[in-house]
Length: 385
Image (cartoon, rainbow, N blue to C red; front, top):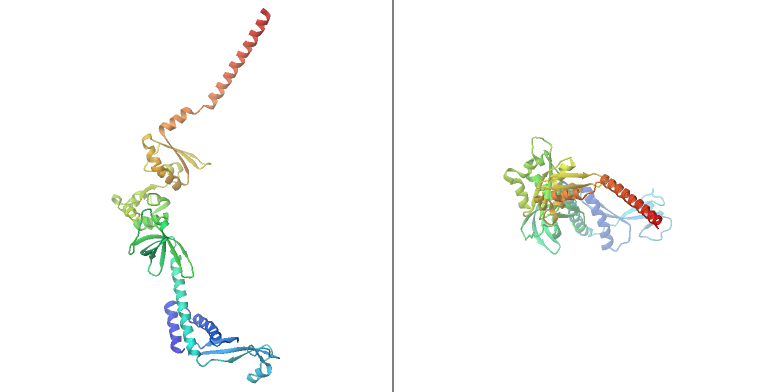
């Protein structure tokens, strides 16, 4: 190695951000192993690389002792003092043992170490870039697929999109562009692993942030999302500006904004509802598009009984209970839905506890009077006999 090699390390430090000193220390450590392996040496050695010239030297390190038992690791005090009169017992003496052709080994080793460290640095840089983008949306190109994953090229790294995280019925082929949500970024021996999802509620949130400037600017806030990917979703929004309608902002002119999101999600139906801090109003809104007659809230059970018009019952419940299920998930409340006629029948069927008590007392009095009359009749019969 020479001064040009040191210059190359300095250039790498500027371009890749890898410290020259750290690289040199790594090369020195690798050269120790290379020396022992190539020259079958069991000596304790130190490798020194000159930071200016790039010259490589190998030193055997020996301990000063009174009696030498292993000449590869020890040196007598007399021999040590021939080198330097100041050596004492227990000191370490360094003797240069640089082989004649060690430069070739040093160059090969240095190349391997530098290549490895550059690869590690790039992996670390990629990991740092993407770990900060967890729970964000990203666009990539599908490269290939196997039984478990789609492999999506993100430019500097390949991400994994599990088949289980794609929208039902969705298929991708080589070269397709795909938007996905970054769910997790992990370190591995082969570099960072990035996992994507098309079914995560976070994808829906990020798509609305891209399409609705009011959300990006913080005027409109997405309060909650409930999603059954590929079928239907509910998004609850609130406005921090009384002059801005949060539902209208998300729907857009003639539904342009929400339709863009629907198209990206392969036709998934999206209900945008207004969030409220009043639980009854919030639950009623969550059941949109169904109209609600009344909501009775049971705080302790965190349950609500909702009455809807008879002709709206099937709409409130939804196909296979989907609308009611999504509303419950959105509000995090249990919701019991009844039609108006069902609610009226329930009221008719309910017993008035006070009337029930009065009726029971009356029945007991009547029974007591009947028993008394029966006893009198029995006495009269005995007298007549």
